[in-house]
Length: 340
Image 1 (cartoon, rainbow, N blue to C red):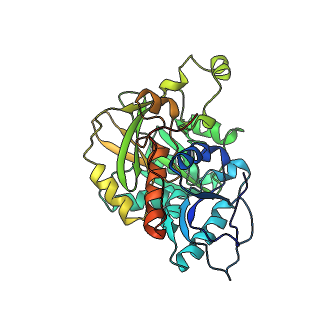
Image 2 (spheres, rainbow, N blue to C red; image 1 turned 90 degrees about the vertical axis):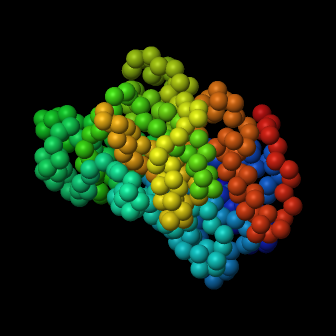
């Protein structure tokens, strides 16, 4: 679905800015169930006419840091231009320029989180493959390598020793970040192999998900990111893909207020924030995903699937309310279920 702006159509609607059709599928269903007019603006490439004003409506930015893995190398740069244009015209934007900046840089995330007293892993930012070993030596082993601009956990490697790092750097699996910055990070040992992802919509806490990391760091919760069970059975120990993501009932954490303050200060309305707890009970926040996806199996088991308490349902309701406020449009009453 490669829709864009139609200069002839000035009816207010929600515009979803993105570069991955599969990730928008569930959002379409929730918009339809609520009678919310919307259009998709696929920004893998195109023309932006700076002479024209944007149409009326609400613009929701879902651009991803991992767009280059889908051959959309310059989609974030084009989105940055679009968001600057929208901002110049005082358009209503959800997850605007600052949100995109943080989506594209974990260094920027960590520095912004630190202003709110939110602990992040000790990290060195490295440019130049030859400098990675020295950075790891300064931190001490074990270390985690990851890309500054990435997504889905791609490129994350745990190295237990200098010998293991040398082998990785000399092998075919090593891949530099698309922005040239490799992060060398102190490994945080958790008492159990899981991390927690906390979801926020409208800047407010929605729910938390416990994510099993025993099978690796591919942590994208969307269906289209999941490994095929047949492939998994031949390469890794058996695991139930639907159990990798489990919504935590009655979740509470002392950092929720700080996370919400951080989001508000950085103009982020929709995000998934990931943290890990070490053996001493200390929490470290290590990723802010402003292009958050949700696991349908986990939501179904928690009774949220298709409702306004699901991730995409909450986003659709939030955007629909913004559109109504902006345009005085009449939006159909919220449906509690989404047609199959």
